[in-house]
Image (cartoon, rainbow, N blue to C red; front, side, top):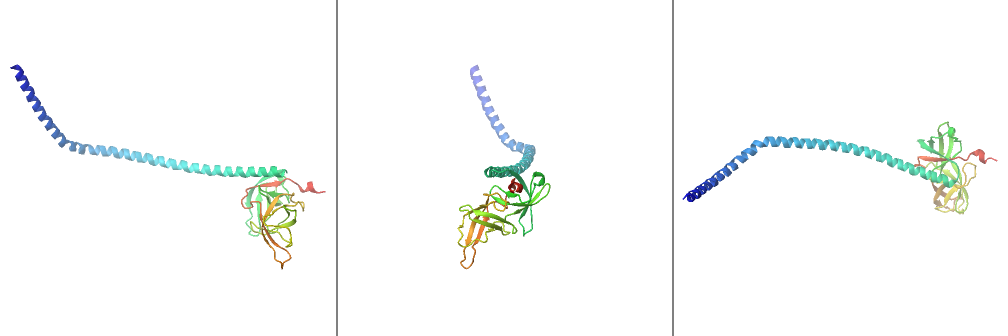
Length: 263
């Protein structure tokens, strides 16, 4: 009898608990949206604060990265410039070794802006032994010669100056000629050669050593154009300078003084 009463009581409690659970679930569904609405301001404030903090942090990081990038780009440009300068200096040193004469390296300071002149200013003067008439080269060929010297700087006239002439010879056969400046950057004239002269497009013109200004065998120019008119006594010959007259920043001064070659 007691067993039946106990079983009946357990079944009653189980039935009531299921009803209570159902009621509890229904109440939870009703209260949950209200709880969400109640927590929304706090959650929104927290989310906004975190978002603003993250945005501020990202903006600061972005600003710092841009500043670092700009600084690195500036350093990279400087490194590139130094690398190019080192390359040019190595070329000059190699050129100096090839010619086998004592050289002085100078640096370009300025360019004469007179449209009828082709002259440059360099940072070497009489203090370093520079003298009037001293040959000036770059890594590729003859640039000109010194025409004015001060204590700490000098002026050089380039081979393209209309007032400049330089004795040359054809490297292929030794034919002697004169290369005269035209005032144009990439143009020299070779005057007074007859139509029958053995000279061709592509011939390399080198210093002949005559005139006691330029030592022999330095590259001067390459012949680019020849016009032979039977009605004219001389051929019209144009050559392009070997030196990079408009791009060279460093120059070579040949330490071969006029006193050394005087009898």
